[in-house]
Length: 153
Image 1 (cartoon, rainbow, N blue to C red):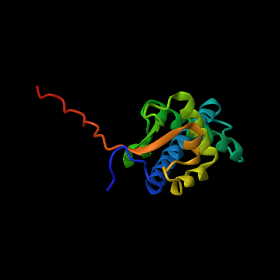
Image 2: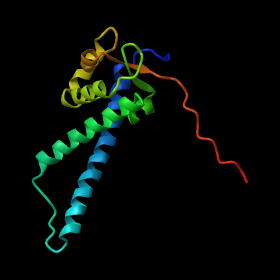
Image 3: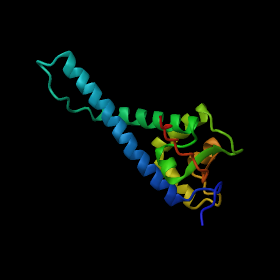
Image 4: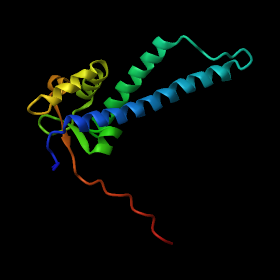
């Protein structure tokens, strides 16, 4: 049985990361689509679909991923994947991670994703990223209240 405020397991964390990967892919596609649309608007007559931009698209993907993870962890302690699977990233003392540690953790997660696998063998279920930035991923069963329906007139 999963209880609140217990370290999250590797399967839950991998599934959350996969969900976040889908979100990052969608955000990256939106950013790149906006750039292409902008190029078309600027010069529609001689517009050609850009090609050979693998390095640029990779950098955009890394930037979007780091930004997405940083904002999610710094503000709410969770990303979309974490919210779906009921996990939260906290500082070792239980408080918020903060912007600097969230950014460092995000950069490590994006550049060294295999560091997550350390959580499978760690007694405290902490990844390499958690060890470096002094964080923990916990199951968080706190219920978020549903939005109230508007009052009838």
